Image (cartoon, rainbow, N blue to C red; front, side, top):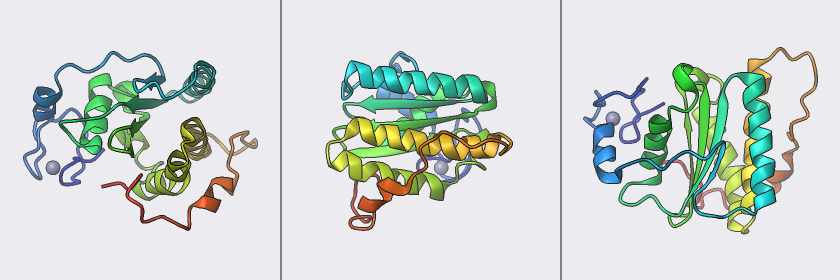
Length: 200
Ligand SMILES: [Zn+2]
């Protein structure tokens, strides 16, 4: 993962970024205690219906069992006093997503800030590049969120990430049932400079 301030690669719960002096301790002091993790789906902003949440939880549980790594979804009412990009970095580290191998991805939807952010553990950084995660969030997920389709945005973003990860982590001997259809791209061309989903 990268320092949310200067972009320098940091590989663990480093006390201080060597690039800019940013410290995860600063985030601890501003944010206090991390919320308790609920599972793979952590809908702290209550944006999902129970069956939507259950469907995503089941999908992500299957993914974790199959791939020895995890994809975690978080919705937060807001991330003040820090930026969503800092919050996702902080929460990923607090929860140690992906275990000691850091084989994990977190997607954060910050409701008040109207932003979606991702954090990728360093084991999977070669698999999910910045460009790919930016494209998934900005072109696929953000347009759906703008339409108020929260579940659909999270579901499609999740399926796209799973398709990329499974394509890279497993031998390509059988076709993936993942939703790799480019349907979500239809809405992408129009407003890809919009603020939402933009990765800072
Ligand atoms: Zn830095």
